[in-house]
Length: 312
Ligand code: NCD
Image (cartoon, rainbow, N blue to C red; front, side, top):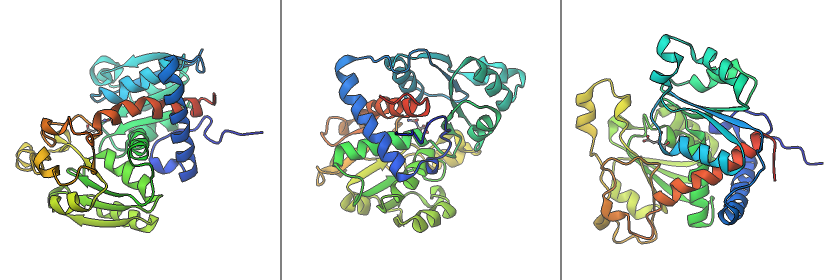
């Protein structure tokens, strides 16, 4: 008998999943894309409720979780602005809020500005907790949909050279994605201004995990060598000094002219973008970022079905 190893688990950091479990989820997401793409809905999660508790702004992550849940037949309880619209504004702790929500819902998706906040919620409750971003920490479900996108666009996850560009210090998506890609021993080219380099402990860890890591501030080198260009926003909300942000914003801007020699270079971005990808890139066939956003629904469907132990 098949025992679902993901049943009832939390997802706090991408390393909570083994490589095999990631592959399982991507494959399941692909099955959902094929089925739901045709039928629009299934009743797999009928009777289950998902709570989304977001203490930080979100468009894609929250709505794609809710879309995923509803298309699988489940229901959603949503607090889009938990910082001001929940009892957090009265001083309630993350743990207390999670405890209460866990009495209403079967699974909790939380986003919060503090590193470690998702673990704090998970420690307080029995239901599965999914980290939808804990400050500058991790964003593991974004990594799942990013992997799904690379797999779809490139046909493989191994032997990929991916250049991650921008705010590698504060960007939680690149923290999770780089760890995940290290499972495939990929080549990671980390492109950032010196002030926004990826934390050296994380870089060392990626190397230990088997990734080949190159750190540079040279965007052109990355464009020449990479299969995938993963562009990120400078994370303004993480800067204590607004001047420092103004100094660093606009460090890298990708435009159509820069990409002209590389029609095979897949361009990704977790979104929202500010000015780091010019809009003249959008119509290129290799601009994958809106397809990437759509893939969030399939990846999150797979995760919800697996954690709620209702595999098709
Ligand atoms: C990212 C995030 O929230 O970390 N957005 C997202 O979930 N797609 C990236 C960002 O905000 O820059």
